[in-house]
Length: 88
Image: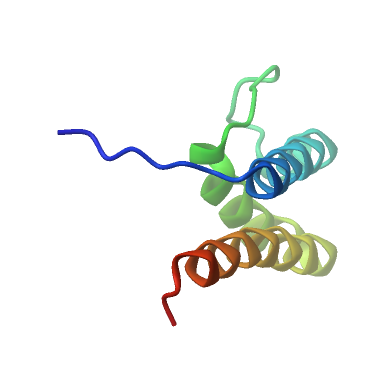
């Protein structure tokens, strides 16, 4: 049976913001970090780890810093979800 997850509007906006940031970073660093990926790749939530790893490995100092910001934005979503569910 598939697990159903219900997101609050705030979580949906946060997830959408993280995906949008990942897409912007992918586009910005495409030739430097993601040269082997399709040029018109549409970043989804499932591809965010791919973007983070590419930025860390090939993005230099700026890419490394931006990868951490992207990762933290996702962690903030997880923390908000855990607090919502009462888990600590």
